[in-house]
Length: 392
Image (tube, rainbow, N blue to C red; front, top):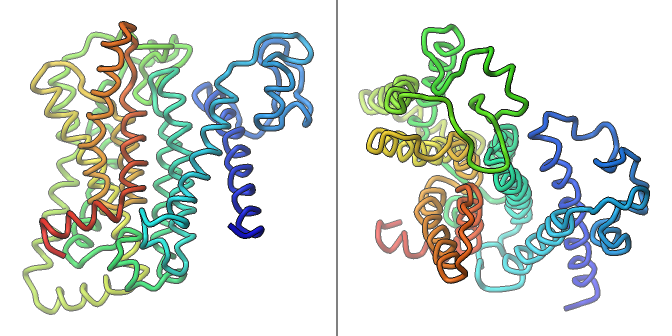
């Protein structure tokens, strides 16, 4: 590599480590409902502010020998691991995208936007996985942040990359007239469902009385107590709660089907809509929106069917939002494939435990995150085979 390329390599790794340092703040503060920006970094044991020279990614943890300078309390290895992991993944993805033939489509002019969106997704999923491993929850704010980034990136993508290149190479989510109609109809249905929920017409699933919520020191996104491992849930009729979610989803499904049906009723409407969706801005936004709904639907359908079949809650709503966020960035095809790849990583962990004879249950979020990273890396290889099976 040239000296300029080495500068880029060092910068990407250092940038990743700095992001990892911030992700450590997110992992610790976000589930505890603390501000991410104020106050500055401080030792959780003695409360002393951490000086800038003691807050250098990787270096400070080693120099301090994993102990606070003031009170000598141990500093968790998680801080070093997250910083190193983030830097290594950012750099690894950079090499794979731009210096190997694993993803040749990233040679397209303007592909840096795709890389940037993927870095946002990777960083957010590292934070979500870290929180999930510790507290068995996935903060919805992380998922919403990634979803918003996917919407914005796909909307402006046509100004940075040739729209035809985006469509042919599937660099960003795009919509056809049919999928665009489904996405728009589902969005209208989601708005109706939320209004019904907020007005009290619909009841939120797994809802707890307010008194119980106030008594819980830390809660997940459904108001359940959050702890360091699997928690004891209140007594629920799980099948009834699943049916409540089916009722909530009904307006979304009905509006999506109606939008698709209306599109096919009139040639004039279909022609007008096709011209509308052909615009890069509309195609990108609706494509990302469709990817979001497909990601959510894949996990939510599994959750509902599993709960109805086994009479206990199957998967969490945090996983639903996590895959919805992934779908907004990588599109509907990749997010579905990632969902079906994730169990193999779970199986690998189970086999490892069987041979090591150490049983340690993990939440599902990290497996989903690893599966998403996998399909991002092998995107081109997967798309060639998908096109071969289902056609272009």
